[in-house]
Image (cartoon, rainbow, N blue to C red; front, side, top):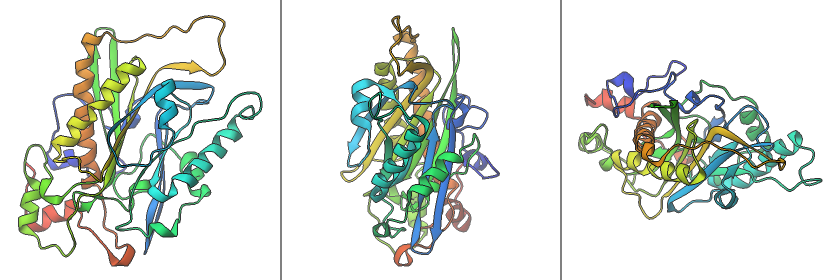
Length: 354
């Protein structure tokens, strides 16, 4: 998207299923993504915002779920989501120490849209995910402000940059530069054609473990290059899964659990210090905030149809992670720290992906 060279442009095709138009989470109709990037010396961080639909999310909630693969994370809003099975705000991704600021900005954004919140109805449940970008970013400076979050929210689109952008600006993945990545898959069922899209914030893994389409690329790179930094896996990854597939909250939870299959195929062993958290929603039905006079009627797929969705989310997750790596660009950040970028390393050492 937007002229970036992605993993498929290197001849790597992940999985069996077809992709959507953009091969991104925004192939799910109504989903848009925006970034605000802060990249200047010690400051290498940012905000990524995702709008699940273009209406009023508080008044028209979506069926949603979260799943913790490994819980070394500080996600906000997931408790209520798991209890009620709905999403009522956009999603914000940022660095670990900016979760509070992001939540405050998201609350302000929702209050401006909904004057009844905290007056004639309840409060609002902001959803914020994070990864720790302290290797490349001076995280203690807490550079993110409410205005940065609001700018990301107010500038979303169907086409968006990946890699070193927004919340991904200071992230490290497999000891290389990581960040934002996305991919999608289309599935065909008897009653319709549906899309499953994934967006990741990648910040995990050791170089030696990196696997691309079954090939030990990380090991090959590790043997070819000399590193001047400690190779440790103490990061995290946030997965956002969007779909227009009609599912219940329970079915959606089963689907987002399968992000782990795509994560594992890239080489992750899901270490102790990693916060690996999946957040998912379906746009197939909107749940009104106000109680209707009649019972709600919501369509869901039959359980025997769900395997195709399992395959789709795994494939899209794997490709999204690889896109976050291959689209990343070089930065020199906190204390002069830097990490190689995958595209340059492949070229420098003549390593082929196919």
